[in-house]
Image 1 (cartoon, rainbow, N blue to C red):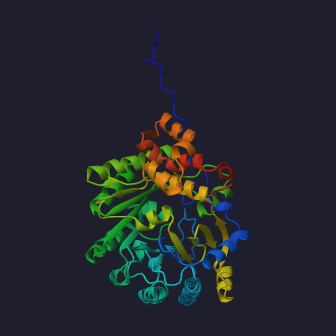
Image 2: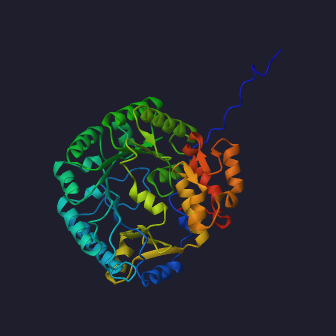
Length: 446
C-alpha cells in the first residue's frame, strides 16, 4: 500500500534563462520614455536650482578592450587616442551646456559616478584632463562618494595611483569570476592573475571602499566553480561584493548567436540554479562576518560602507548624466542621451543637448518607483512613504503585498514588509507586479 510519504514530490518547473531584461533599474520602464517628451527636460533646466535635492554626476566612458558576450551597454572597442579625446571634449561641452542652465548653475555634486564601458580604459593624463574639467563645472569637493568602475586587466600601479589621485573613493572591480576558461568563453578581457595583482595594490592606496562584482550563472559555470569563486572572493576581503544573476538582454552578442542558431534558451544556468548559487554565496559571506544589505550586495562593515550613488538615486536625487547613451534624472524627468556616438557627437557639435528620449514622471510614478527600488534592500517601512508621498503602501499595493506573504516571499507586520531570502533572490521578477497597470504590458524593459 502506497502512503503519502511514498509519493514522490512534484518536480519544480525548471525556469530556463531566455533572452530579455528582468533586472529593474528604474521606473517607469525605459520603453515608455519618448522623444516627444524631451522638451520636459529643457523646461526643468530653466527652473531655479532646488535647495534640498542632492545632485549626482554621471559620466559614461564607452570604451573597452573587448566586448563581453553578455554586455548590453553602449561600448566601443575600436577607438584610437584621437577619437577618445574627441569624445571627452564632446562630453565636456555637453556638461558645460548643462551646468550653465539655471537648474544646475552653482550646484555641487553630492556623488559622482564613472561608468561604462570601462572607465579604467582611459590613460592617467586623459583621466586627469577629464576630471579637472568636470570639477570646474560641477565641483565635487564636498561629494560623499566618487565611484569608479574598473576592469582588472587595465590596471597597474600607475593607473591605480592616478585613479586615487583624481579623488575616487569607491573602486568597483569587474571581477565576475576567477576561472580563466569561464572568463574567456564569456568574452571577458581580463584573466585571473590580473585580479589579485590589481586588488592587492589598490589596497595599499587607501581607497575608502573597494567593491568587487561577481556574476552567477555565466556560460560553462558549475557548482564546483562557483564555490571556488566565492571562496576566492572571501579571501580577498573586499569591503563589499555585488553579485548579479546572469541575464541575456536582446542587444548582446550572446543573444545574436542564439538568434542565429534558432535557440530560445540561453546557454547559461537556469534561474533556480542562479538563485541557489547567490544564496550559497550569501551564506558563505555571512559566516565570514559580512551582512546581506540588498538583493545583490554583501558588506563587511555596513556602518562604514554605503552605496551613496544607489541610495541617493533610489530616493529621488537629481542625476546629471553625460555621455553617449547615458541615463539621467532632473526635476522629476527621466532622460537618455543619443545611443550611438555619431548622433551624440553631431548634436553636441551643433550646440544642442544630445538627449534622445525622456519621461515626465507623475507623483504616483515617483512613489511607485521609490517603493519598488527600495524593496530590493529587503525591508520597507510603510510610514516612510506615508510621510514622503502621502501614500500608504498597504492600501496602494494590498494585493501584491498579500501575494508576497502568501507565497512565502515576505512577511508583513504593522510597520512594514520584510522580504524572505527566497523573495530577495527573485525580487526583480516579483517587482513587475507592483508596476502601475499602464506600465505592465510592454515588449521589453529597455
